[in-house]
Length: 211
Image 1 (tube, rainbow, N blue to C red):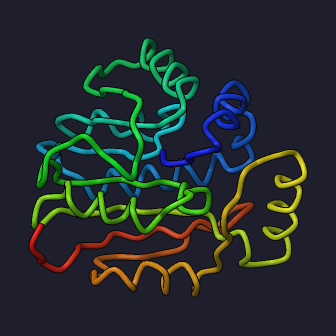
Image 2: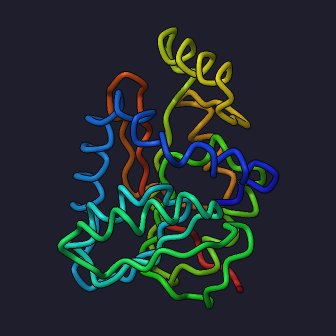
């Protein structure tokens, strides 16, 4: 999770993160179901900005393996603690920056970036790295809350800002898809998951280019 100078903030938030996202629990459940429908049991997956590991641990029975990274030590500690209670142990949680991944080119069938685009300091660099580590026919599953989609979501993000939640940008459905479209990719599927804050869900494949 490439939060750069905000690492100390995410270390602080790690202990209460599950409570923070509790109001959006149903949206995360729908997100997980969408991901499960899109992956294969043979897939090798990378999750960028895993946080406390909720998504990776939920989908781990449905794929071969998952590398899940975050640059917050406290978040990774929480994720590893959560894995102690998981039936499947095919997730490797590690500390890493999303804009300088240590993984080889063409290493993954699927990369997941879930609800992090609005807090990344340098999202363009993160997308570039994701593209590098994906196999030529690999898929990026990217989802993000649309904090400027309606009045309620705008009020929620303003409240989060007031209590110190770090936000770099906000999206509505149009600006979210316009941002992704600049990366020479094709949308395989996209939808909006309704909830307390709408959640944009997209599956994309990049056009071929020399790595």
